[in-house]
Amino acid sequence: MAESRAAESSHQRDSRLEEQRQRTAESRAAETSLQRETRLEDNRLRIVESRAAETSDQRDSRLEGQRRRAAESRIVETPEQRETRLEDNRLRMEESRAAETPEQRENRLQNERVQRQNSRQAFSFMPTFKVKGQIYHRLGSLLPLPNENHKFLQIYFMGDEQQQVNQRCGNTDGTRRNIVLNLQRMFHQHNNLVKMFKTALERMPTDEYRIVIRADKRPPGEHERRFNAPTVDEVAVIMVGDEFDRRDIIIQKRNDSLQRISETHRHMTLFSTQ
Image (tube, rainbow, N blue to C red; front, side):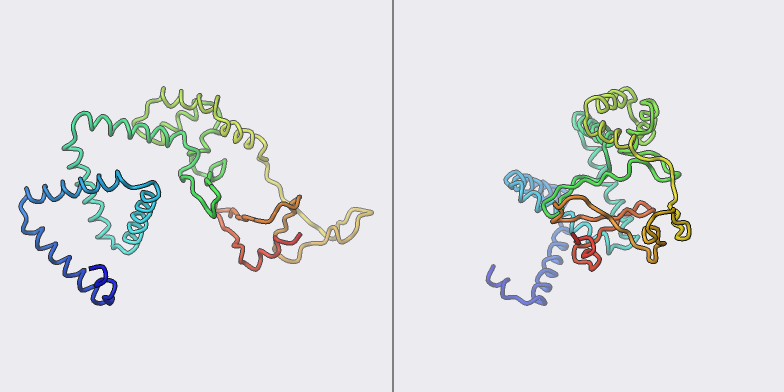
C-alpha cells in the first residue's frame, strides 16, 4: 500500500481521498445511535493510548500542527461558516457539561478559577515564545495608552493596592476580592520582577519636552556645525561598547505597534557601523 500511494499522482490521490470521504459519510449516515457511540468511544480510547505513548517532542509537533491547521481553516472560512463553527462548539460544550458528574464540574470550575487568578496577576497577555533559540516575552508598555484602562502589567503601577484590586476585579467577573488582594500583596512583597518594574517606572520621565534647533541662535564660542539644523528625517543611535555582533532592533510607533528592522534590510548596514 505504501509503494502504491508513493507512486500515485496528485489527481489519483485526490480521487482516492474523495472516495474515502464518500464511503465514510455513507457509513456514518447509516449507523445507529449505539453504533455511533461505540465508534466515538473507540476513537477516544485510541487517542488516549496514542497520546499517552507520545514523547514531549511528538506532543509539541502535534499541537503545532493542530494550531496551524486551525489557523489556515479559519482564515478562509466565511462569516456563515464561522457562526456555524461557534454554534457547534457551544452545543458540544453544553452537552459535555450536562453529562459531567458533580466531581467533574467542581474540577472544571476550580481550573477556571485558577486560570482567572493567573490571568489577573499576569505581566502580559502573550505567552513566552522563542526566536532563533532566544526566549522572549512581550510585556507591552508600562503605562496604558490615552483613554485606555490599566491591564496586565500596567495594573502593578496604578497607585495604592485598593485601586489595583478594584481594577483586577473589574476586568474579570466572579472574582473573590480577598484572594486577589492576598495574591497581589504576595507579588509585591516577594516577586523580584514586580520590584524591578516599579523601579523602572519611578525612573521614567513623565514630562514632555520639545527639542528646538535654531541654527541662527548659536551660543557664543561654540562651533557652528554643532548646531546645524537637520536636513533629513533620520534617527541616529550611539551604543557604547563593542559586544554588538547581533542586533535586534525594534521600533515602537506612536500607536503602540512594533516594527522590526530586518538584518537583511539595507538600512541595517548603518546600525552595523563601528
